[in-house]
Image (cartoon, rainbow, N blue to C red; front, side, top):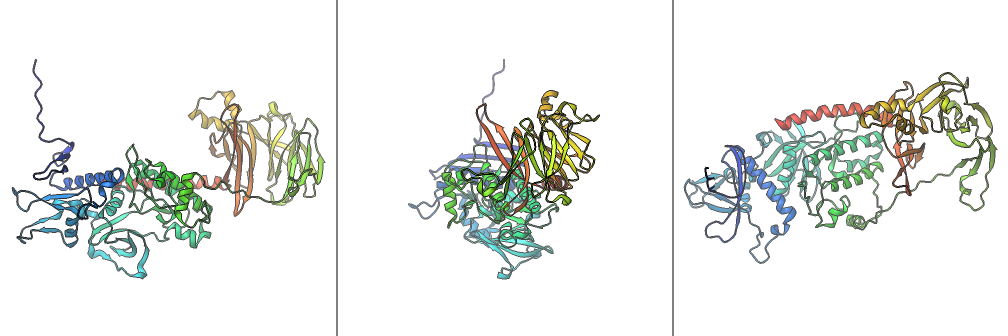
Length: 638
């Protein structure tokens, strides 16, 4: 039996190997005459080696910044240098003993030129790209390197688009097209520039700002220009342009960009209106909003990261708290804050705070304000279990011993009045409709009964199983749409002839959808599909809420399903249109979720009444975005 040979290792460390021209070794080493331990990175001296070195250095820098930030602080007992020192090894001639230079000092040399010159023999030089390619961005794709001859740029106030603590952004022209040029301040670390390049160079998506070029003298990024500026500017100066559809599209594009970043294991950490750039205000455009400024974006391992980054007032409590491990969910919290800003056209969850850090403190302590209550004075109509309709003045309802202004007797103890509805037909502007037992009735604004229709029928196509059931929902336009207790069908009645003309079977629609996602029995599906509530959107759609928690959007003209929203809750109770403050067209949906046998939790959700239109438009919009994303994915692969 052959003996296993003893393995001899010439070097120890982490070794990655793709090909003879693409490998990397990261190991520890003790250099001559130095007691300190070094981390040494070895790559081949070729183009692929440059790229690998840049990526490894970026990862190590990220690791230090996130988990060992103290090592990057100034050594107060030393000579003003950082505790952790970064060196580049070099020699001017082959075979010579290597020398070393601090990266900070080499960076100063790189700002003057591409060569490191021997001070004793000026004729001896070595390209800086051969020593530390990442310092002069030599590891980037060649098509990204800035061609100064094609850049028309002037650092003048009239071209300034914005500025911050790390740099300024100017309007310029590159290769004949208008662009935005980000100039980094002299004191800003090269690390910030490279952090942005990690995202901009390697990730391409319709919701991420595109990089056109990068330069080192001075440090700059040339990016596509957002003609409509930032979302922050729109919220401050032109919030009337922010229609509900546009709000949705902006939110959709930002969410799409975040999803893409998270799929690449990157945490953005600075989501706020200022960093969302707008390219158009046309809702059907393929590109409307993009995420910009990746200076503090960071790769995230499964363990998470822990540095307290981001803008106070726009970050998650765990990020603001500091020294706490967090992951991509921190971006989701910031996205929620952005969503609030957009839907309220610039409002903040906590108003009246003098400093952004105050918001962070409230978030950390869990003391952010609750929901805002909207109130509107009007008459209150109450249907009773014994078939009466009581009319109250709303301001008297909370008063002790309040009495109704009027009581209409329509049914009896076996025919409860369970639903009321306004007609959306303009010819019946002041007419109300209701259901009492098996009868549909209407009355005018002076509360006099005008019409009474009996819906108990033996017509051939009627749903005889529920013919005698009490009416639980009625909505009206040119026809009457009636739902009865425990029935999965919506009855459509002709108002003039007072006859049943059509049945809409919800189970039929649910079967096609639910069979693909679950193997429910026919009985269970019928129970899940029983109609609980109805709401009508004029000339567009019928909203149907079921006992199984499904919401069906039905096209009124074709009687075809626009969209089924599955299992929104355990059961939908009520749907109605309303006006909330400045929101004129909303749909309120009341449902409940059964947590346990003892506890039932109700929830009221607010929907845009134009949802049916939005669903149809969104399907087309998503197809366009998919095609665009696929094109950009091909760019990444190439």
